[in-house]
Image (spheres, rainbow, N blue to C red):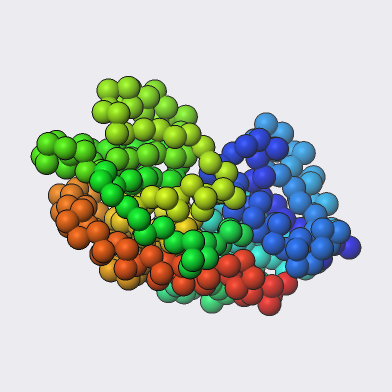
Length: 345
């Protein structure tokens, strides 16, 4: 009998860098460190619709062979996996755990109230923010626990913090490359500032996996952009700190509907780099305005422009936050973040 069975999107050994795949792999690695690899069994939901009967059989075996079951479905999979495991558990009586990836669950449950009944059968539902706990409690769920996003990163030491900056100040984005992550807003605001000042005061480097539905449009944008706007490709999360530490600030103008506790914030904190982010979803709960980052109103590009002009004139505003970023990063070390989950396993 295995201690834990994990049903999640592992990506079939492909180099997928979306939030769901990354978090599934990271959580599995941390549980393997804590309980040992021999205590954990996994099944991969990648492309499961091609052979749903095979996946159903694997889920049955997982329930039969494991004391605890952890599921990590995306928004489309939840309608299948919640009822499936809830019904199978009438036979096996295992401890069911649902680790939520992103911030879309409250809205989905409002539109699909029948799922709440299945979720009440779970030992625990683990969400990334306290705000989500409050909302889900109001939906009638009393088994919701806090499990913030986390990564095992090589957090920068205080002595390694980079304080030496000069014009042009280097900005970056570090997320999936798609319109809803605010990529075009970041590009446009940097261009607007540089054009208005008639010199290059900011550069913008864009990192991340390009969403397949946005690839053609993004390539056209980069093709006509000035040389101070660059796409720098994909960086594995284990190398994120090394890359981000040399940037003045990380820009995150997201309005992505599924946003939860964005991993890019963790990357920036661990690198000692403040985040300039939109007041969207849970960003304001994670980023403490004027302490470890700066918040601007959602879709208010003029406000983002004003903030960037202010930090250009007074770069110490950014520099004074760098130490606070490192302090915040310590809160999200894996051993601290997964305590709540381990308690219930």
